[in-house]
Image (cartoon, rainbow, N blue to C red):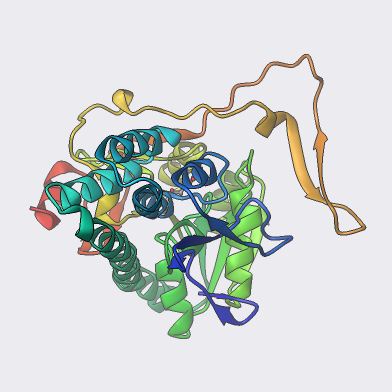
Amino acid sequence: MKIDGKSYKTIWFENNLVKIIDQTKLPHQFIIKDLKTVKDAINAIKTMEVRGAPLIGATAAYGLVLSIIENNDLSFFKKSSEELIASRPTAINLKWAADRMMKKLSGVNDKDILKIALDEAKSITEEDEKFCKNIGLNGLKIIEDIAYKKKDTVNILTHCNAGWLATIDWGTATSPIYHAHQKGIKVHVWVDETRPRNQGANLTSYELSEEGISNTVITDNAGGILMQRGQVDMCIVGTDRTLSNGDVCNKIGTYLKALSAKDNNVPFYVALPSSTIDWSIKDHRQIPIEERNSEELSHVEGIDENNEIKKVRIYPQKSKSLNLAFDVTPAKLVTGLITEKGICEASEKGLKGLFK
Ligand code: MRU
């Protein structure tokens, strides 16, 4: 997708370095950053210079390539892999990517290891891009259907950033929207601000605007009244981990949107590549929910009149805060899962029907 009219991917490998777009500076500054070591990759994930489940998975894969360049030793590789997996606990993609790299590299000769690792990291990114494109083509049918019946602009609500910046390209939740826009269907997106880090306001709104898609930022609490007023035709969100029973773990606040959608008969879809499915756990209470620094709540960051990024405290120093980063939307509130292989019911039967 484009920034200032130029096409980008979110991560790539060049001259033995991993290149990323530093998302902590968007939308105010566009900075391409070099990751030189596996520690840099771990740090980029922890500080959310890269974020979004598929993108942090790809960063873990490239981080392991960097670990081989630094020190081609199996114990260093294993330690790096464990640190990458622990860097953000909720999204399953980190483990998925690290395990995939480990499997590919086991038993490989020292002289071939770097090339094979690099090829595998590249195929993880290429596959994600292809899957996200297919998610878009599958989800497009839902938007087309609404547009055909409504004969007017389709209003879509989304939460957090499950856009191309959270993946390699296209995004998950946004991919059907980009495809609809490219087909000439009129769409408008309600963008949840997504406190505390404002991924909706800072990233989703930014990337949609760069593609010329009409969008409006709303407070996280506004979705309910918009749904009551009939101003939302559908919701599409992403996911950091989808259980085999169809429960969906995504950015904090997703659950409340799904409850409101149910109460107002608004279809609530979740878009995901299969790398986000956790087939191993059956009960959502076993999902590790990331708890982040309370400073993300107590402070806000923005740009001042001199174009300088400033951070300010917004509530008393003595106030306690709890910063849970994700919640779980039960499968019964999900209208359907939009995947690279098609759309299915949010259930074990639905998922197994698509992914044997
Ligand atoms: O904390 P973040 O910004 O990494 O959270 C991202 C989300 O919750 C996304 O919706 C999810 O990763 C799906 S991204 C395609």
